[in-house]
Length: 551
Image (cartoon, rainbow, N blue to C red):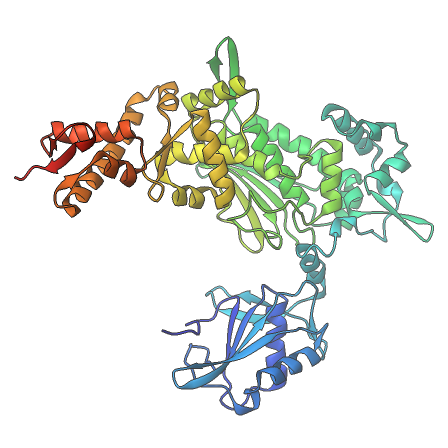
């Protein structure tokens, strides 16, 4: 079995060493990998994956590691080992992802990327990309940087008034309203004083800067809003305004294209928007707070026949993936900007705005928000148009009214997965929700105890469905019967197979141990097989056994 990967990837690099790879090319390859995701360099493998062997000058792993440490700034400490494969020795060098920008001793800063055809390549990291990389690593808060060419006079008094109104209306920190303009700027990191001179920060200019100065100082702070119906463009606007004004414009635009329906819940009429206002607000906050302002692109909002898309420049920050969106520790690319949004009341204060984005869809029984079209250069949130599942929504409301608590995100994810897929194993739910196994088991146990879901089958093959009560509340009792009947059929098949393996005989204790059920449940299953003529009861009481009927 081949140990060496068969092809190059973003984290796997092959280098031919037949004639002895020169040191500069080796160091360049290591620097590029360290400044990206980290990975492994295989010395003695051709680009097409053919193994040709490491040159004797690189046959000493410790010596190669020492060379790399001496020729990189700051030093990259690697691990290397000789691998024997296909009759050749290969040097495998494991390179950690660097938490700072690394250069070769010659001053070259490189990074690794994938070309259009999927093949990796090393390219220069240009000066304007350094801040972006450090922000991704959490080593630099770009939004807290000063603008040396700006002064506090570049702040717009009208935007400052808008800021104070937002704090009042959105229930931000009330003590901020008691501060003078100068102290408010300091409290929200709108300004920094260096050697007695006060400079606006990027956060300050983004939120309350004058429009003309904002366009000049931060040309990347642009926004696009489009509405497409079929092939027709109904709305197509671009603007470069402070973010507080931008939010109001976008909320008004989206409201005009976000119709509501109403449903009755007891004596209350509940409005149901086509796109959840909670999801939209937090989606916009994330797009503006966590975007990369060094990239000359704009935040783009598009409403079309399929749904609503929010596209934000800059990929997921380091450590965030599609699989851990809802579980990774909250951290952002622009902490100062995100903190200001939270304190004035525009963003979720816990830092878990992503939970609110998902919650906004799940409470209406709609498909989950989709981030799958995101790339290393853009984060793309898609919210699909879909009719609400009213019975499911009302079932959630009933439970919340009964307990006096809102549903945790994990519980909503599980219920949403079971609503869509009907019947799932523990592994299936784990893959669908990306909840860790320990947390998932705890959430499932609570949902079973609450009577919202049921567990079927033995411990190893246990599966989960929505409970009979839940199906009844949704007006779909036949759905439960269908799922429960499947479990009965499977249990019967297992009992018949066990009887075959035991010379055609089975006892109630056998059924209890096999299916991990109580005695009355085992008795009912065996009795049902007897009534079908598959088993024959022999004896009574503790001596009762069931024998397969020969046909």
